[in-house]
Length: 370
Image (cartoon, rainbow, N blue to C red; front, side):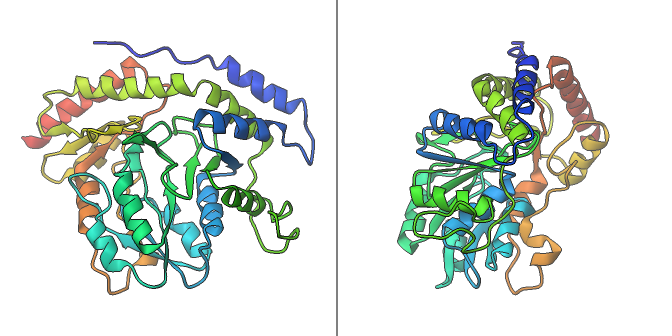
């Protein structure tokens, strides 16, 4: 079985952090953040990049830049984490949850169309597990209804579909660099955009509107304490330099584990779309066993982490703060989560770890069927 690419040297990260430390304390320092933003535009081929404190902050700032505010509605998939909906609520808008197609994991556009109203301002596609929906369908749906597209691409750095990179489909693409992401920096995030007005708004919003966009005055409106700290920016920038290696390693890890599970009873690997270049963020398996969610939770207890087994991910429309309306539950999203085993990986997972995961999965699937 083909081995994994070597893990990049940790020493390179330490040198970057020490360099940032040598500049501290500096209340106005932004050298490493500026360098990181510049390199992001080169790596992801976007005109503007703005570093922020988290992926949630990225969504909050980008939605604000897209004009989302009180009494607006925002379409977003129920197939997501609560952090996608939180900024919508904090801006005074209403999240409207849309179902997903169990066969493709993409948005159910018929359901989205039925939930569109005159108050709908934006749509937020979520590239969960690094998987990306069809950009042509998304753009057509949004253009017909004059909706801003703000992508939650937190897990999708390195994915593209039909030649369109994740984060470049609409007005803004929002990414997380929290530990566990392929491009990581302990915490943090960034916004990519081709629109200078969007980028200027995000820059102002992340820093209490102290550096206003053209036509605005300092602190003319409220923003967030959402800047990326310099130490985090130094770590992020160092990892960005080795991003191709980190991406290659994650793809190799996922391919290695899925090959090891070929023939495992009751487990079938989910394949990307034919026009999708997937970053392989998380090995995905369709569970064809009784009580599939209970099986995922059982695996988590045995040391195989997953979205549903370890983090108990459920459709966002079933969270307590979003229930109680007259909307029918998003059954496609529930079906996807109940039947999908999305294994959580780290760049440090080597062949021994992946072999152990494969052995546990194969053994427990056989026992579960019995």
